[in-house]
Length: 383
Ligand SMILES: Cc1cc2nc3c(=O)[nH]c(=O)nc-3n(C[C@H](O)[C@H](O)[C@H](O)COP(=O)(O)O)c2cc1C
Image (cartoon, rainbow, N blue to C red; front, top):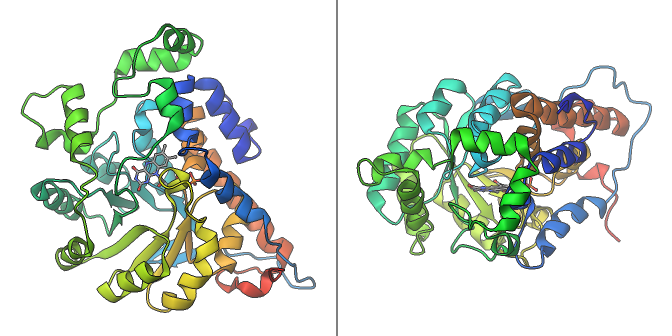
């Protein structure tokens, strides 16, 4: 697939859809229950307007962003997406490689299909690690140590998975590790020969960061079952976050906060950043879109912690709107994953460059040559 023919993220989505059997595509695309959250995440960016200023010198534009002692080339990064190798073998490291080359952060998923150590080789200065707290505390502590030894500067604790969610597409498709084999599944796989050839060559991907905690000599199935049985740890509370704050001296980010009171508590606890997020509409269908709660959270803790946001970002202008609302940085999940599924490293690079170019154009269009100067004055007030 020639990913360079994609002119927007939706083109990459369509290419990914063509390449993947339904069971895999639906795993990326799907949300929970009625998928209202996904629709909300995207619709929220159409609820407001950007009001341009003209007669501003926009001949030189700067979208670089300062975040946690680093200067990134753009104000967005690649969010954590588990099981990426199911969409293309090696996808985690492709995301890491493209992110590092584009000088944006790569957040490795706690359920990634490559290891912390491998990410450190591919993207030593751009990798963050997203932690899912395990039932066995020793595993979590060891993963944090490995992240530290690998030299990652940022640990992200995802808090919005108190329980597995009801993902109806997955239930309908017989999704599982391994999937439930049915004639329809086999037929669909045969209709996607590129994906099928990869799958037959590489087999079922495994959660690489969990290998050493499963029983010695475990095969892929046992490792995946073991890892899936370890998360989520439903007993996780603020006390645990406090413990992680004590043992992790570098930047600590909490991902999945939506309630203003939780944001205040996280700030009091000393986290460095918050990613306001509803997990891409994959956990609680009735949850607000991150953009809806961002202004309130910004008013409460915007001066104490670095506020970031994700969910529904498909356009550079979405990144700009989020920043006008007070987000310092924005993450994308599906956008870059479509790229990886459609075309590997080149596809991720394409996704990044599409968003980057659209940000650049929007900065010029609204008369704000420096992304650091985006604020609410560019938004048309609601109502
Ligand atoms: C296929 C897929 C897997 C994901 N896996 C994880 C994960 O392992 N950990 C996590 O914190 N978030 C995970 N997320 C959520 C993303 O990090 C991010 O919050 C979300 O995708 C943002 O919404 P967007 O896809 O509309 O950009 C996943 C999202 C997708 C689409």
